[in-house]
Length: 320
Ligand code: CP
Image (cartoon, rainbow, N blue to C red; front, side):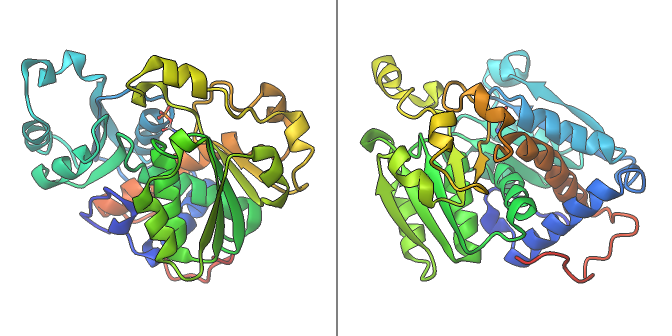
């Protein structure tokens, strides 16, 4: 993984993804031992779009590994406002740092950044396209809840059109196989055809589409809720009409399996009632924690710093 950029999870083999999951697990149990892994390294976070979790966890990850951080949160105070291109920004910042995390509202921006940069670039979300490190957090959460990331029935609910976390997660799970997807959305926010094609091309995976959350929830191992994203709509009336289509509350949770896990990439607006937070099936704040741990694993791997005491070929403690 040394020197590798991650624009989509296709940039990592399934073995490398499993190794990152193992590394994150190791990091969690060896915080002091890994605290100087990235001494002398610098991370740049170039965020052209708002973020709380992703930017702060990328930065915290590098700080907790002993490195330092530069960057901007919002391009309005950078030379982007003077018309500087993504390519020129990356050619510049590559001179300063060892690794870049970039978020941009346009699909494909992370690929452009990777092509211009001379250091590894990690996609922290490009428009409605992909969010691979969120997926790493999601996979870590599935594995900690179920001991596996295959042989699951996973409902994805809400904005499946613009939800880049959904697209990334489906892509990754199809690579491991044996997942039944239940795609729950209004017709206007259905999954794009290229994502459905990905499932259809995977012999061990399948999907059904439905608008009925209450009807589907009882058969799910995992319910992955998503926010209807105001910032992706061209027409505010459409957003207002669709935003509260699904609200997960105690009444709907009563229809679910006792060990179903509720995931959400966050931020949430109304789609999960606060009362659900106290339900042991709510896993979304575990996801936040796993996001930091997985970014620690990824950052140390792409800059080529070995975690003290970590043996990458040690027997796996949990199944795929
Ligand atoms: N999950 C996620 O991407 O959150 P932020 O937008 O706060 O980074």
